Length: 413
Image: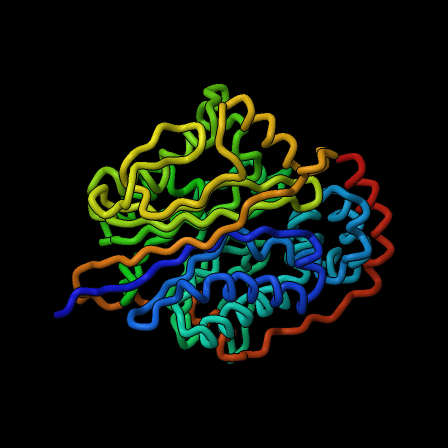
């Protein structure tokens, strides 16, 4: 059998809250990413385009442009919860979830449809495989020919599509950051044992969303299943040149670029089963939140064109492609610049991040394994991609009288 020769593309976009206030704006934002990547799409081999983590999260703002003037995500979320009380309150009471999860679940059917249909249409139009990044996604099942949502569940989920827009597979993020847990956007953690590898013409794909790529048990599970191309969609919620510190040792603070060397680059540098990794990172300020980083494609040292590395770290082998940061220079200057770029800094360079499109041509042995069997949730998502009708729910208008109680509870929280 002939070896697999293919191209991978990592897109580093910038987001703004206004990109998510309407379906039209969201579609245009995603399309701009594919248009930026178009010159790098191969004409003679399959292409995989990898998008960034949580690029569907801000769809909670859809129809809420009027609230952006409140300036912080917490205030905007509270305003949207109250404005959408006929939808949000029943979810909160029936499914016993927090207000922020209820806000997301209340419109999750429509937003999931918009998100996946937009990615499906772009995969078809551009003729590429797509790792859609990730989005807060409910757990679905098919029942009597219709989609049903599992109450209360909302994972950080990545979806892979083929060039026909059909589902290849899904993966949930197992290790959530504090901003994704209770007190943040309140997502459900995935299950390590549910992670699978998907053999395709563009690699044996395993997904480790952001923090998962730092965890040996996640990498070990994917490696054991034959992963050869690791996909690490990322949304680093901090200035790239700030100090990083996460559990289990938050006191062990170090420069974020140095910490990032322990994810995709370390996985491919060790020379194991996972030969390549693709790590796109979103940049930009979303209300009061800051996202920054350097996207990268890593692989064997002998395939890298030169020694290089993230800012504030020494050059090294293994970076097949690397997005530059805004500037290079002494660490103290870069730390100061990162603060200037951050949300609500008031500096003239606020939100002046660097976008990029990276690509690399990869080669792997021919694939002989079939795709893993689809889960019930994946069967449901494929039905959604095939335009199955999502269920509609009656609005219990009598519950509106409880709105004042919810508002008071939220303020106390």
